[in-house]
Picture 1 (cartoon, helix red, strand yellow):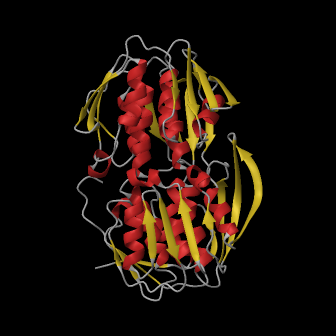
Picture 2 (cartoon, helix red, strand yellow; picture 1 turned 60 degrees about the horizontal axis):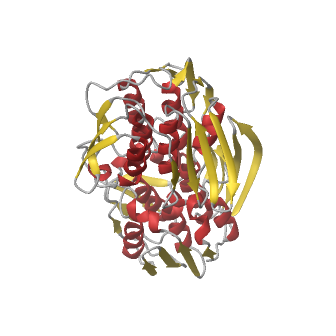
Picture 3 (cartoon, rainbow, N blue to C red; picture 1 turned 120 degrees about the vertical axis):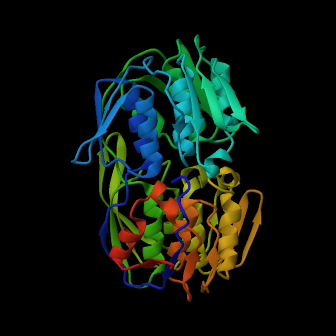
Length: 444
């Protein structure tokens, strides 16, 4: 995506969305399948992997570190692992594009192995702070040379003699927790992460599936997750469920576009990821879960969504970790709800692909929606949405998709200044949505 020219898009009022669709595979599971497959013994096979740029960049990175990665014509990805201590220094830079998850988890994976790697990313990723992972990884014994402000480009010198640590997360972050746990895999002894607030637990679930020696205890000060290092992992066969963060867009589209009735298949229902579904149901959204089942240690199901009259609510701050990526889509839904929706606990949105909170508020205001906000909260006054605005996406895929959904039910079309970066997480977004009856088209 580096250097790609902007691709502005417009969405217009649509109704009667109908059909079944499967959104791309879960991004969190896709990254972790490749990273753990790279250090397992044997061949890991992953089907349903999200083939967006973020995940493809992770695949290229683990290949550069010594794992063998290939995709066969049936869409299955094969990763031949090198064992927990087998990663090697890459010959060139590791380019993570737009992916904060990819780079932060890879830094953890590499930190306890004596290799040197230089990590780079696009303009958006290069503006994001890496200190939250380099601080604990330095305690384990890794060294880092970074650009000003602890940012990319960043050179990692992995620890020759890694030491186990007990690390209490200063902020709720699944990425930081995962980076420390992955570093613990090649560290002797017991590495412990204490999280005062539970965050998404895909790393723990997948480590367990790969055979890691991992234990989880709930104590007074939070969840204690302990990994005993230097045990080999065993390759796995993984069917990646659909990403609930990507499902957010067709869910909200069907709720706000009159006369809609759609089914989204095989969506991951891990309770650390379903905050948006819970919230939309509380607002009056007609969402039912069908065909609930287990796949690869994760609960999945099909979501049937029908257009609904929504009402504004207070969304509890404690729910933020289970829906942190879905607030832009929720803010759009709130614009069409009767009354005021208040969202709290949003400080993490200030350090996403963009200052996502400011970008959401600016996009809402550009389309005639009244808002109020503070450092970590946003309030949206709902009702009829005028639309007609041009939204600045700031290279943020979720801002682009959220406001394209807004245009499906606003009085005038909504334009976004760039949709090129949507491919990082949701390839063929416009095609899949238009297949349901949406009107999303390029602006000439």
